[in-house]
Image (cartoon, rainbow over the protein chains, first blue to last red):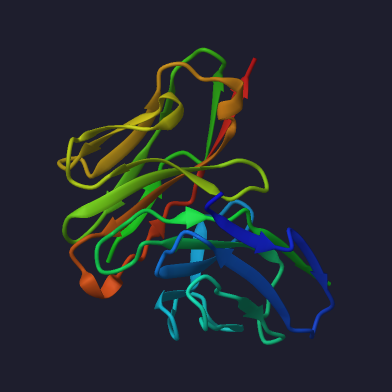
Length: 114
Length: 117
């Protein structure tokens, strides 16, 4: 089955700890994205990557970091500098390039920080 | 700059009656538009997309949307609601002509649909 996997589905951490969310895709897509979703709100872009070893900040990158060492993987680290890390995190991928293509989403990871 | 406004945060319909979800967009050039659906604690699934071909777009599960440039709207409709349509729906825009934007999408705030038996 082709698709995007995110793990774990639920994640709990203590305040002050860094945590890394996994995102893997086997769609052979060039572009990958991380979004944050808060209750009653739309999705906000954290980081995106159009190609391996390159990524750009989205609209709310502060307190987050990413890497793109492999085409199929785009992990997101939520650092202790992120003031309100509790949220639902969604990873997506698309064919990429300068044309617009739809994005395919993973099932999400719900992060709770106490 | 591009933006999306979903005019209703909540819509309640009875099973078997029509569904209308309203979306207005703002885009500098020629937009691509999408509707996604999200069931509770799940990822987003693409319902349909408009990319400058036919203005009436048919999607999955009986949904369709009409692109109206003069009204800058992309409303989503379904003739007969089913209980499984209860979910949150997002209208999304991307500006096809701004190459620097790559494939960045802008999401509306979402419309939560309740279907009553």
